[in-house]
Each structure stands twice: as structure tokens, then as C-alpha cells.
Amino acid sequence: KDGERLTAPGRSSASVLEQFGKEAELFKTSKGTLQFTADKPLPATLVKKIVKARMKQNEEREHARELKKVSTKKSKKGNSSKIN
Image 1 (cartoon, rainbow, N blue to C red):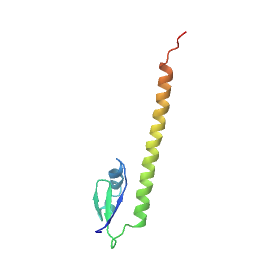
Image 2 (image 1 turned 45 degrees about the horizontal axis):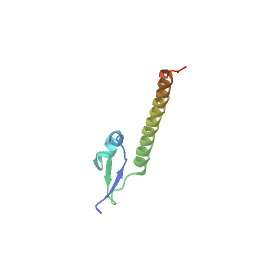
Image 3 (image 1 turned 135 degrees about the vertical axis):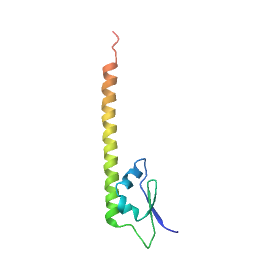
Image 4 (image 1 turned 60 degrees about the vertical axis):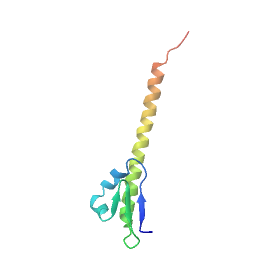
């Protein structure tokens, strides 16, 4: 193996890595992937920052989904008609 890859799966992965510009520049990157070798491992602090940023994104996405569900339920409830 030439090296290892830290992949943050999902559409927002690239945007997370962009947040760490100078720190991530030290490693080979592609969309959503940070590549490193055994002789040049990722600093633990960078890994922690990336994980925290992805967790925040996931929490925000989940919150948006929950709001959408509530909004959809309210609009469906308001549009229902009763048959007598």
C-alpha cells in the first residue's frame, strides 16, 4: 500500500475538508478524501476537528429533516377535508 485514506462519506465531505485548508494542504486530497502515508500520519488534532465538523453537519442535516417532517405533517393535516 502506498498510503491510507481518511474518507468522510457524504455530499458534504469536501466542504468539511475545505474548512481545514492549510492543515489539509499538507496531504494529498481529492473530493472528500484526505490521503496520508505511514511515514506522514494525520495529526490526531486534525482527525478530531474533521470528526467534530462532520458530526455538526450530520446533526444540522438531521435537525433540518425533523423540521421538514413536522412542516409536512402540519400542511397535510391542514389540507385534509372531512366527509360527512
